[in-house]
Structure formats: structure tokens, C-alpha cells
Length: 165
Image 1 (tube, helix red, strand yellow):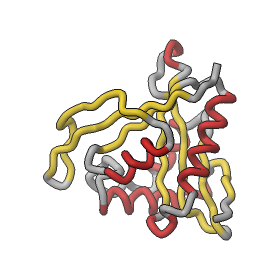
Image 2 (cartoon, one colour):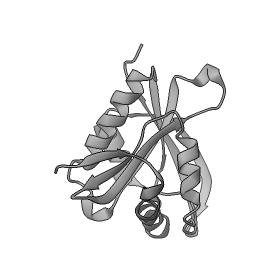
Image 3 (cartoon, one colour):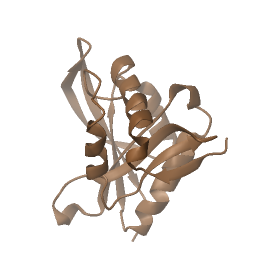
Image 4 (cartoon, one colour):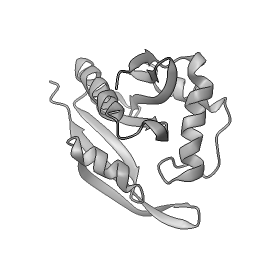
């Protein structure tokens, strides 16, 4: 499927928040218990300053977004970034997630990022499978640290070594 990546910007606010809040309300993929208000998008923009962050568009419509951000604020950890991405459910399993991941990894390498970390709910088997399929390996698990929809959840940390020097 042909897609266009646009640098995440204020004009993407409404569709990005709609996609994110779909996962908040209907899954364990996004951690908040209740939908976030539109101004939360500003937090996404702030977190991604200096990092690649994109809206994914198909035929002019925003159908997803993805971003890297600092994993830790101290400069000693500057080679590690955390990744987040979500696609509209109608556009999953069509290669867009893989294309977005490939784009973010390529730009991470250019920035000298050697490690990409993903925080995934253990109840989100689809995301765990996606990450493993694309070379991420489990590097940690925090047991029962979250509770959403009345269920305890583990947070699984997955790591991809980018090969950047």
C-alpha cells in the first residue's frame, strides 16, 4: 500500500488523537485508562523534539503515526530511544507498520541511535508478535505494574539494536 510520511505537526492533531484514543478505549495497546483530550497531542510534539516523528497518510488521510523519543533524559543514554506507533485498525496488516518502523529505524541510525526500545503490554500479543517479527528481542519485563480494565498487566520491554556506530 502506498503511503506518505509527513513530519508530525499540529494539523495532524485530530486524526492522531482519534487513532490513539481508539486504542485507549478498545485495547491494552495504549496505557491510559480513559481517552486523552486533544491538547495531549502537544505532549507528543514536545517529547519528539529532535527525533523523527511522522503521520502516515494514505490517499491524503492520516491513518497512523509513529515516533521516537528520548528513552532517558541524561546525555549518557542519548544512543537509546523509545518507539511508539499506532495505525488506524482498518490499515493494520497491510505493510504500513513495517514501512513506518523501517523509516524510523533508518533515521535512528543516522542520529547515532544504537538501541530502540519498545514498551508493550503483555496483553497486546499482536504488538509483541510484530516487534519480534521485526528483530526486537525481549530485554525486560515488569510484572503486574499496570492495571487497566480491571486486569493486571505486565509491561514487556523489547530492544532492537540498530547497528549504528
